[in-house]
Image (cartoon, rainbow over all chains, first blue to last red):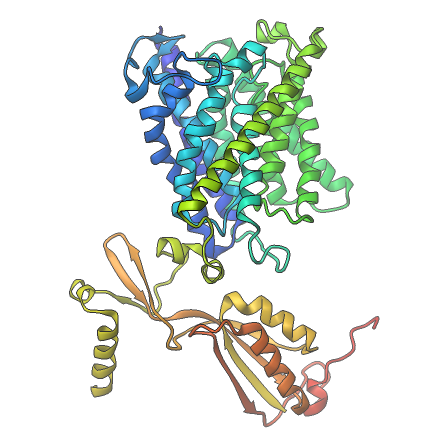
Length: 429
Length: 120
């Protein structure tokens, strides 16, 4: 081990961690102001319980030696996870780096269920999901599982993170159902600058996500880093061009979305393809997501913040194109269609379909089981009022007008008695 | 001519506007206001500070109408704004002394008669 590798991976871990608050801003800006805090909390809260269960059990299920489907409990409670080398870095650092991926993946799902899912049901869901879905899928690809044996290429999580989250998002949106206002009233983003801030911070953090996935500070990290710059740039350029060709205006929400789509597309390919291929991939990747966004809004599927269009189609496109553009000259081994190995495309398609099917099915089971013990949806009147007040007892934008300080002694007086006292003293004055 | 002033829940505004447009009520003004109408106060907590939110966000609609439009307008607001919970708001009908349409100088009845949009 050398300190250059360790230093880069320490920094990468912090960068990936920042992506979850960034996602909170990206999503938070896209909802109505009455749900701003709830939506941001759906991302933020993953930083807590998900990270804890990851350290206690999730990491072991994903990365300890087991069978081709799932790891064992060998590393449960971080037993045996110390300073010994795991590749070029200490095992403990590898666990922390992977933990930041486990945190953001369930947070991505929240985009499909914002503005109507009960917060405590969501909390229970993401904890069960990271153990029941994320950990096994991560094991299949990165922990020595069967997708790795099949030869599937997923550099930083096109299938493990994005297709996985999007499949869960699709199922969650269908199980929980559309918002009451969906398709009846216009539902507009309340703070587009937040969304742009989120997209910018996501891009910044994604350098850790992709280049950090090299797990060292060498030439592979350099390639992944450069591709993480170029692919979203190409997606943004292509998105803007499509906007203009269609005779419309170039929108800010569209630009923020394009950046995320480009980042998703290059994620599985980052360390396997050359920089010009990354530009081509980014440009191609804009097309399915662009039109899926327009189409989805006309359907009954209330995938509210378009997790499927951005992460699902972006992830699938990226994963499949990795099988096209991977080149041994850049990857140091992995080859795709343009490097004389067309079978890689089929392997990539298979890996996407397998993750899609498992994640969708398992998510359905988790949600249906949860529904037996707690309602997944908030009451209709709370949906109208907004989840900030109903589920958090706070508002994002309050001026405090008419707010009466509750003094400590009042809290022991029943509500009705307080009201009576207020009325009497008011009348006497 | 009457001025109809309605105080409604902000989350019902879309429904109210939809009902008003169906009733062909065209000119209206809305403002965001805060008020108290006897509804349950909810408690919010910010770190150690607990507050009772005594004023709730409301929307005030002001609609100048001719006499035969008064009842359809009230019906539309009721249809859109009623949830059955305390805090649904009020509708008040006030007499108007005079109305002038600024663009043309038309007064009273003519001033509240909507022009036909171009093309219809």
